[in-house]
Amino acid sequence: MALTKSSVALLAFHTLSVFAGDSCTIDSFNATLDGRVQPLKPLSLPCFSSYNGNSRAPDQSACNAIQRDYSDAFLRANSANGFMYNQIEECASDPRNQCLLDYTNPFNTQALESCHQGNVPSFSLEIKKAEDAMEAFKFSRCSGTPLSIKSSGHDLLGRSSGRGSLNLWTRNLRSLQYTPNFIPAGCDAGASSEYRAVTVGGGVNLDEAYRFAHDHNVTFVGGYAPTVSVGGGWAQAGGHSILSPVYGLGIDRALEYKVITPDGQYRIANECQHQDLFWALRGGGGGTFGLVLESTHKVEPRVSFVSAVVEFPLQSDSRNVLPFLDILVNNSVKWAHEGWGGHFRANSLINITPLLSLSEAKDSLAELAAYVRSQGGTVAIEEFADWLGFYERYVIPNAVEIGDTHFPNTRLVPKAVFETAEGRKNLMDFFARQVSQGGVVYVQEEGPLLYRDVKPTSATPAWREAVWAVTADGFWAWNSTLEERKQSVSQMNEMTELMEAITPGSGTYGAEGNPFTKNWQEAWWGRENYDQLLEIKAKYDPDRLLNCWKCVGWEESEAQDSCFASFE
Ligand SMILES: Cc1cc2nc3c(=O)[nH]c(=O)nc-3n(C[C@H](O)[C@H](O)[C@H](O)COP(=O)(O)OP(=O)(O)OC[C@H]3O[C@@H](n4cnc5c(N)ncnc54)[C@H](O)[C@@H]3O)c2cc1C
Ligand SMILES: *[C@@H]1O[C@H](CO)[C@@H](O)[C@H](O)[C@H]1NC(C)=O
Ligand SMILES: *[C@@H]1O[C@H](CO)[C@@H](O)[C@H](O)[C@H]1NC(C)=O
Ligand SMILES: *[C@@H]1O[C@H](CO)[C@@H](O)[C@H](O)[C@H]1NC(C)=O
Ligand SMILES: *[C@@H]1O[C@H](CO)[C@@H](O)[C@H](O)[C@H]1NC(C)=O
Image (cartoon, rainbow, N blue to C red):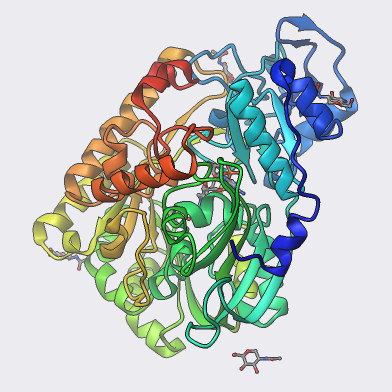
């Protein structure tokens, strides 16, 4: 193993404990870690007078703070017991087994009957150094305690928590480093490429990466959310950006991961060493191949671009929505080739392109702009000198609401679908059905169509053909019954099947897929990638210490012991 300077620092106090015989208990583990293993309790517990069936005294001032900031993503991302959505922290199959406030009104006292642990892990260990993860893997192996890893708690499939688990919390690994001429460790300096790169600790979020890159006059190509963690689920599962059409996905831009694999080893994975692990980490998904302490990502010289922000008032019967969507369907491939990326909804769109000038952008969108204006809407086409200005103006205020139960349900739409009349009609029928059912129209236009520097990654190859990801989200109320939850899942499954039918042979971004997708291995990776991922999993995690919902190596039979048991 080639040690770099920083890996030597991480290993400076590398003396692992030996758990003797029957001392493999949480107490002995806690003692080894100087008492840093903490019991984990639900975020909203201070508001309740009963916990797991025992009465307790509420803490009114702590409760008020949680009520006030209940939908604040930063509060949750910065708390060991903070998860963005209810499905991550409640036990979805058992509606009484949860500890939630009413997100529509966190001051609603009707919610405050009883607090149960739900899907919240039993214990939390804040990861400060490599040895913490090594000890945790060792403890899990000898005690059988399941593990989970959480950076920000955004995982929409609930994979950063887990009932009964020891949670390894990486959020406070917050180092940031800029290297204008990065050479992956172990690569031959003369022979290999140098990269302009930013190296981040395993807890650094996009907001921090954007500001840091800005301070160094470079652009970090990242997602549409301040608190999503860079080197956690984002850059391990796929990592789309509204700049992806031109600059590729997070997995395309990752250069190196420093990771503790479950076999207890500190490893550096990049194009020159542990290439199999490097490939697996670029698309195989978080929480599967090891705990990432640090990751390095290619950045661009400062990117300037043109943005288009359009919105129009809905007619009462949404009559003016389908003509808008028709224009988008007909023009999407042309726009993708002009570098446009972004999102649109039934009556709004925010897109950017680094490839067109202001006047070219106006020409490109003329038909769309004319329609929007004819509906009494607004069109703003502007230039931005850098990403941070756009991010502060449009991304932060448009952050997706959190604190509710919200399942993504996305599907990649390949270029070919737009190229036949039948394909376009299928898409319009899909939108028509969504609109008539009162569903949310939300499309990500982020396929990495123009990105040419593609190295093999383990995510579904469907990304390389994709122009859009369409979505058909599922929701349920904080106080819904099991029947209502099942109903919502079955509607979502119906929409998944419909999306699959109109995008034959395509795939799904696993991190934003319907958790109840049947052929998930095929959808998220493709069979060939999946089989290879399984082999790599067996090599680095032979005892399957890391296991999560529909992650590589997960078995269907494991559903029955999970909080999603009722929905499979
Ligand atoms: C509001 C919102 C907006 C989003 N926007 C985008 C977007 O614009 N682009 C995009 O591509 N995706 C987006 N996503 C999806 C997001 O990328 C995934 O949910 C991703 O899994 C989040 O990763 P995380 O590490 O922040 O979350 P977590 O919930 O902390 O972790 C996610 C997964 O990674 C694992 N993990 C986390 N940290 C580590 C680590 N250090 N080492 C090993 N495993 C780890 C966890 O175990 C879990 O399996 C969005 C999600 C939400 C909720
Ligand atoms: C670990 O030890 C510390 C310090 O004694 C204690 O506060 C904490 O509750 C212990 N953790 C567990 C899980 O018992
Ligand atoms: C920032 O980067 C841009 C694009 O590479 C360059 O034109 C500009 O001179 C740089 N500014 C500074 C202050 O270095
Ligand atoms: C989109 O293309 C179809 C043909 O496939 C055509 O019938 C329709 O009028 C076009 N829509 C718009 C708004 O141009
Ligand atoms: C659920 O909570 C909402 C308020 O968020 C309330 O209007 C509704 O009556 C509650 N439903 C049940 C079944 O208690």
